[in-house]
View 1 (cartoon, helix red, strand yellow):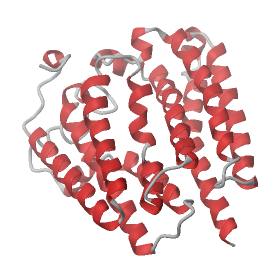
View 2 (tube, rainbow, N blue to C red):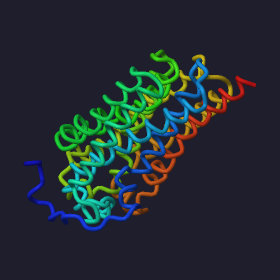
View 3 (cartoon, rainbow, N blue to C red):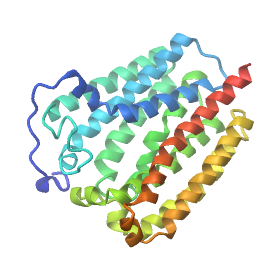
Length: 309
């Protein structure tokens, strides 16, 4: 039996789900990040790709990301039902059954890997298969409910897409996609821990061992700031590679200065101060983290476009 399952509300068997409910299974917000970072990884690669092949590759990477989301919703329906921000998802709300979510996830997993192999190459397809497995099994089944390092290790799943995009174009890897991986990997913990600071009851009620639950809020604040310091060198280092340049470097320097400043503000605050102003600094840092990643990858795309001109 899964941990915490007995304490969770009963999940409805599933009703007549609408098309939008099945789209929601794929976690479209997360998928948008997968699509964008995978596209940038493919776009900045030093090998030109036929536009049709590029479109198909990004599409099938997106389907693979959606498959991971559906499998995650299938397994996590019990804890989703007790968290305010997830209880309206299709499975815990009863609009889609757990069996349907599992079927959608497995079908799209196989389809996305097969079609990516046919459209691009089998190295990229194998990488996509590993990414789906990592998120759906290693993170969702084993890490999420067992360790406060769930976000740290599990963040690798969200960091793979630009590497897969690069592999679609080149058939291999190099330092550039590895640094793009590091950018997302080290961004993930402070992004989610900032959210956990002002959504504390959700993770506590669901029994998810988020750092705020297992180590306390003061320790979480230290970790947020520490990761902003670890993240910055990797972000800047991308600007020194073949895909970097003055546009990217300017964006990276400004964003990382703001990110470190935001982490420092969170570190200096007490819980009493945070509660008094409604977690204003924590919410501001979380909003900044949403722009942080998108703007880094947008800068890479702009830099590559200027380079072709």
